[in-house]
Amino acid sequence: MEVEFDVQMTSADLYDYMLHHTFTSPSGLIGAVAGALMIVAGFAGSGALCTIAGIVILLYLPVSLFMRSKQQFLSNPAFRQPLHYRMDEEGITVSQGEHEECCKWEDMQKAISTMRSIVLYTSAVNATILPKKAMGEKTTAVIGVISTHMPPKKVKIRC
Image 1 (cartoon, rainbow, N blue to C red):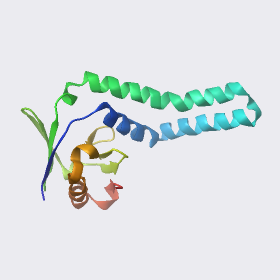
Image 2 (cartoon, rainbow, N blue to C red):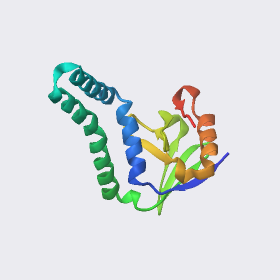
Image 3 (tube, rainbow, N blue to C red):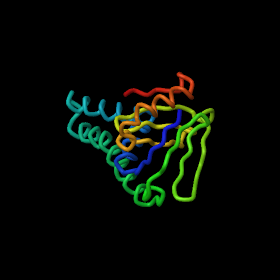
Image 4 (cartoon, helix red, strand yellow):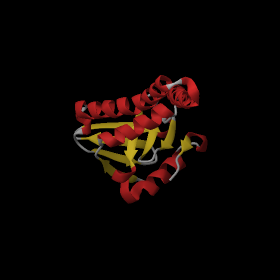
């Protein structure tokens, strides 16, 4: 089975990926828990300073990620033109203009879903972001191709 589609990335797609990536990592979880505990401690009697510090900690990451996604989107020329994806038996081929890259299914580390996207990790820090909005009605076919070619323990996609 082969599926082809085009993706025009947006800063909102990058932000969604960054939020998910950060808040599913140990450091992101620790930061969120620390901020929440400081707010609870502030309301429990430790004072307004503790509550304010907790709010700042909780808001810092989402705000900084939002700004970083905007800056990365604006500074990366690859996001200015649509990317063409082709998924087949071999893997995923991404092309833009004259450039083309292939990634084999066995090189994929894991596949996850966020509220807005399906994300294929090719390493711990490199990922292919496939916005569900851009895939449209092909989203189900894309999930099928991914699920067929990757081991089930590597696929954590919820519709």
